View 1: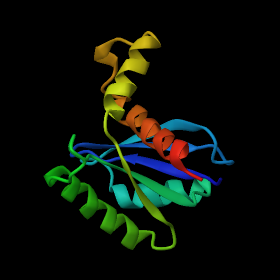
View 2: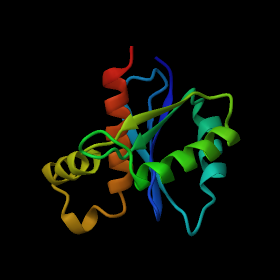
View 3: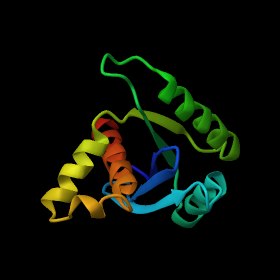
View 4: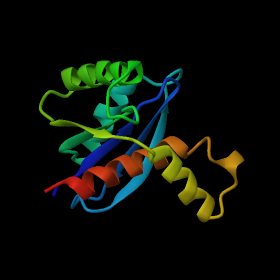
Length: 137
């Protein structure tokens, strides 16, 4: 394995998680607020700083596995991201239930629901990476 960056795309914020240098464990990194930060440049900085070799982008598939308008927005962002970082493989991973799982884990860790907002996107990105790690060869 190798270092990977998990991305939970949202309309207001993008949650970022990363694996360790060996590509084994995922941990939260930051939330990129789209009204304050240009996301492609910030992601490029994180890629350079962390030696990232794979980008993992959550894809919000419908319950039946089909793609809707939310997927179109994520794929459009993915195209811009790939154009900015063409040397890196970009992998789409079904993000089904990642936010729910992240909320459950935060709650189990003693976090109050009102405290979720600043970190829920990062926690969802961790779950996206964990899904990818669980399915990676």
